[in-house]
Image 1 (cartoon, rainbow over the protein chains, first blue to last red):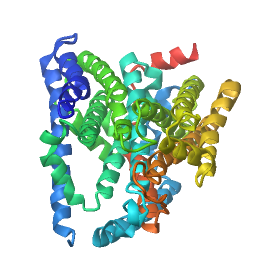
Image 2: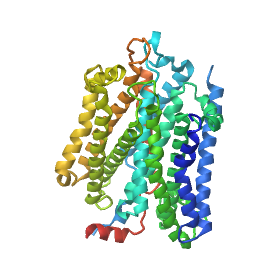
Image 3: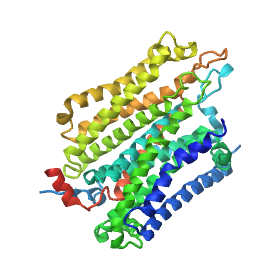
Image 4: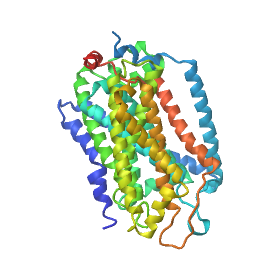
Amino acid sequence: MTTAIGIPILFGILLLPIYTVIVGFLLGEPRDFRTAGIGLGVMVAMAIFMIASTAMMGVVFGRITPF
Amino acid sequence: MATKTDGVLDPLRTISTKFIALVAVLGIAALITAEAIIHQLRHGLAVTDLASWGTQEGVTWGLYIGTFEWFAGMAVGSIAVVGYIRYRELTRYDVIARIGELWGLIAGLSAAYLIVIDLGRPDRVLNILTAWVVTVQYSPLAWDVTFVTALLVMTSTMLILSLRRDFSEMDHDSLPVYTAIIGQVLTAGYRPAEREKLDSMLRWLGLALLILAFTGGMVPGWLLGVVGAQAGWYGGIAGVSFLAGGLLSGVAAIALIAGLMRYLYDWETVIPTDVLVGLGKGLTLFGFVYLVILFNELLPSIFPMAPLAESRIGEAMLYGHFATDFWLAMAAIAIPVLVLAVFRERMLASGTELAVAGAIMLWGVFVKKQLTVIEPLMYPSGLPYEVGSYVPTLVEWVITIGAILIAILLFTIATKLVPMGGLTDTQSSTTEVNT
């Protein structure tokens, strides 16, 4: 059970706001998939930026750390 | 009659010598911090006073993690405020929402930065990323990384989309060239027809931020609350306690910034008195709730039936080495709560009193966060270890205080780059306030 608890926490709690945004943007009135797409695109771009910049930082620090 | 439009763009149009001096001082502080980080990178965590239990008689987490909890809490409180304002479409609080968006993002980044600093070898973030698929199944630390990432992504999305709406209503030629360029980028492809949809999306995003604050916002508390082997941390109230402290510190930070900006830019119409009163009510409520939760957290450990390990920590908290810090922190929260509750209207007529109350409460939460993390670690339970000690080194103080000053520097610069509110609905918003 210890190892299983993370899955419901991830999908049932931590990702709730993401579901809200996706459903709200796409199905919320007025329907406008172009603007919703821009909003979701911004969110995906920011997610990629945050994760990629963290990874890049790890690589750079790995090169300059003297041990 | 002055309107909100008269002043909300003032920070963009003026760069005073005081501003330049402030940026210069904070910039020097950032350079000194960078030097301390390089020093720690060269010599490792040996330059800190962090140490193992047992023969080293130390604590494994110190100022860095305590300050992480403080920043993470402020980020949670800030996004809760932003979420509420955007979801309820409280246009009078537009500037407060922008302050919250910027500070929530900066506080989230500062929290993430302190975690990396505490790793000792920052390249280990690669291990966190590559092992995430496995560790998220059982590790609260992986949940915390997920939460902080979600917070940064959603707060930055809120900032970008709300700026897109604000910039779409502005004449870019009247803005400084760098702000105009940001405006051009953020309004790329904008069509007036999308305005109504953008309003709706900001409402949904506000709801999502509220959900994130009240669910994921408990995760940094769980980091301590699930550690069954550590008396003083373990327990079901840790997540709620973190959330309550976060809501208080987030509102306190926003109140401090709002009060200062109102004073600096004569923003009597941009941040009217009733908005200050609203923030004051928030501080009073969240301060009181936080105190109630802290009392519930502490009581079982000082009751005569408490297990030995728990009672050692409870008594140390109240009467031990750090008791003065504990009681001062409690006073720094309780006294402003009392004063705000009694003298609310008179006290909040100008923003400066609110800013002072916010600063004092922020300091109180900062100290309590340090004690929550550090003090239990000094009392290892279940093993015959001596009571540990911890005296942060100069490097730790420089990096920690530097993190705070760098956050202030980033916010200060941001006020000169992006508008602190929109021009939309200004007239109705001002009318609404005046009536």
